[in-house]
Length: 343
Image 1: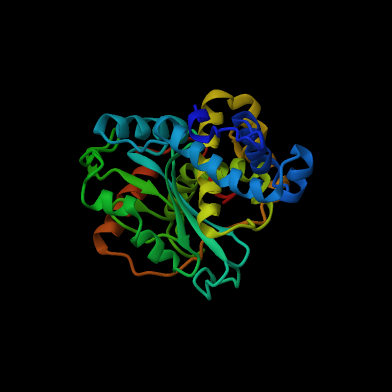
Image 2: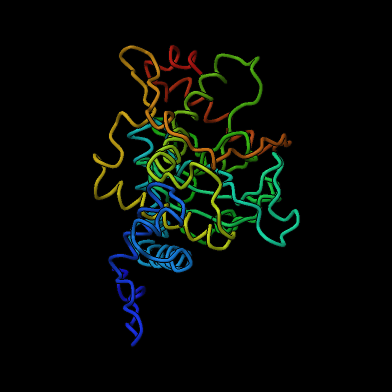
């Protein structure tokens, strides 16, 4: 698929590195996070050339795989399929995805000043991603500099604009199952994101009623897919073990290639790439949480977004209250009272 984009012509002086070798070098780098010096000894290719091969091949991988494996839905039927999967697998109706963001650490970019300097004192770039019920990335915005506030990242995100201007075919409000009240289709996130009519986050604080604890549990159950997706990504692509040592533009190419390869492998080689024991899971029968093996892997180059307190709008609070009422009545599940105590 990518051979036409990375094939080079032999010269009278040297033979070009073949597309197969270029792909092998790049996949080795993404999977192991090895230095370019180490790769140059393994493949007998100069380090300077490897520094050009990796971003070029990553770009080719993304261009070839993104239209097939990471395409955001554009019709009401496609969005309803995403929503039905969340309802069937995670008992959260009218959900269009789990939103999450990560900071990817970089080495200090040359001549960048404090442009990529984040609130933790690191240099980083930001991934903003929407994840479906099967741990695959539906959408990813990569490349916002780490200096930006987390609220500012979402406010500038193309997905937010598309949702608010109704440009991606999201269905109109619908009734919750077995409940004669209409609510909008929503995405779920944590408290790093602002509460909106289309974006649900947990009730804040610890001193809450049992009903609000149930709501937060049900929301976290659906949102766990995004945590698992990033967990799989960081455990399988060891390039996220430490700050990426290249310029931000090339780092963004590396990140995008990892995201589409993740989706391809979840689709084509699920059992080998992400077996069940790798994931955080609920043992409903024994009423306990089972921690996934991805926690055992280092992912030192991935950090969470900063939580910022915001005052939500009244209409957004009303939508969250409707979901809360539903989860405690017609939409309840038998195990939620015990499992909510674990959260």
